[in-house]
Image (cartoon, rainbow, N blue to C red; front, top):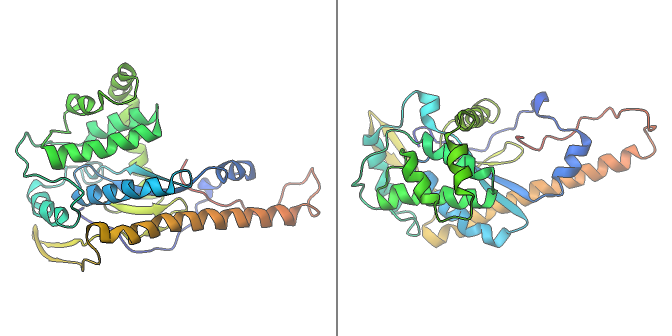
Length: 284
C-alpha cells in the first residue's frame, strides 16, 4: 500500500530453505500455491483478494490461493497513515465493483494486529475457513465500517463460521498468535523480499504482477496512477494467468523431480547420498 511491489524479480536461493528429497515428493503431491502477502488496512489487497477468491473456484484442487501475513506496522513501527489511506480508498473502489467500499463512519482501527491474530488462530483449525474469514474481515473494514483493530469485533465476524469458537478465542488471545504473525512477516521481508502490499508470489519466491492500477505518492498526496490495464470482470484473464503460473511452476518442479529420480537409479548405491541439491519449494 505504501511501497507496493509488482515487478518480477530473480529468486535468490537460501540454503536454510532447502528441502530433502522426501519433503519434495510430499509437497509435489499437493496443489500448486499462490500467495498474497497482505495487510488489512490495504485497499489494494482487498481488490486483489476479491479477484483471487473469485478465480479460486475454477482452480479448486489444483491451485491453493492463500494470504500471508504482512502487517505494515510491524515493519514501519506505526500503522499506515489514515490521510493517505483515505485518498487510496476510492481509487481502489472504482477498479473492482465486486469489492464493497463505503465511506468509513465508525471507530477507526488504530491497529490491524488483532485481525491477524484471529486469522492465524482460524488457520490452526481450517485453512479454507481462515481464507473465508480473511475476506470477511476486509469486507467488514472497507464495506461495513467495522473496527477490525478490536479483537471482539473480529471474533464476532467469525462467530457463525464452521470453527470451534472457544478454541478460536483462546488461540487468538495467546502470545503464540502474535509471535507467529511476527515471524511470518519477518519471513516475507527477509527471505522473500516483500516490501509492500499486496505482493503476489509463487511458492518459489517469484513475484508476480497484479492487474491493479497503483498510485504514486509525493508529500502524502497521490500525484499520479499507473495505467489501468483492466476493470472489474475484465481483469479475470490476468487473474487467471496468476493461477496458471502456479500450475506451471508445479509442473516444472515435478519434471525436475522425475529427472533427478531417473538420473539416480543406476548412479548412487543405496548407502551413498546424492550430490545434487534439492529444489526449494517455499516457506514452511
